[in-house]
Image (tube, rainbow, N blue to C red; front, side, top):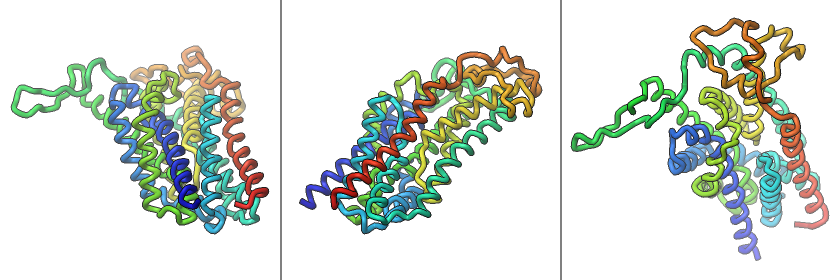
Length: 385
């Protein structure tokens, strides 16, 4: 019976990691693959390697938090661990059915909190700290990117010019005995540098995803001692890699991805800020959502860019033009207009986010961990497992 439960637990853990790899690869490498900078196979390999690195380093802290600090390790019987992982997998299934990305970290914490409430072993101090960071980190993400969008983005756009030229970035000179790489016919040294930067940031985001999300797949199993810390990390990274090499190929093909619709420079800003926040929280042992941080970065960057048409006082009072994707895609000339001198018609366009869609996403971000906690509490309060 115990061996059968362990096998079920391992399978559910692989299922969770598999889905994490499928979704996180698209977020991390969407801009690089969409721009032709990295192949899908290369993106999957890099995702696997850097997710393992993130899980092996900062991910240990998150596994320890979720595997023995929210509730004592003694509460993670094998059956309870399987039940917690089941709730995480169920939340992934529900979110995929409705087309809304759920936060696996928040859902997993909700399930563990339900266990703690049902058994009277929840560490309220640890839980309060985690929830506080869930509230604060999206606000930090928004304002960092808002400041960048308002005060730095146009200057970076004018100086860096990260537009991609037609044709291959690199070609191989086969005239000699050994093929040698050289710049493509339309590639400049600046463009090659920007390409390298895009790939580096994508790897950094993969590192952040591994650091934050490995715990979602294996923390209960590590907490009860069924799997050692190192073996759990390898299991989680392997499952994430499996998802990266399989279902992630479809997510990388998705044209409507939030990040791939952004210019390369905007994608770099969003990925750098969101990955840095999640990496910092992972080192603190706080499980947090990369999707939430990235979304708030996109909104903040667009809002900051759009508010350059008005003064700071007018922006804070709400007298701003409609936020738009065009605010980020508008090309910056050699001379950046001074604050308040850009025409609102230059930045007007399709709304950066549809209020109805945004409300639905936020609703599911709140709903999935709440349902997870409620269902977990109901199960553990009525069934002695």
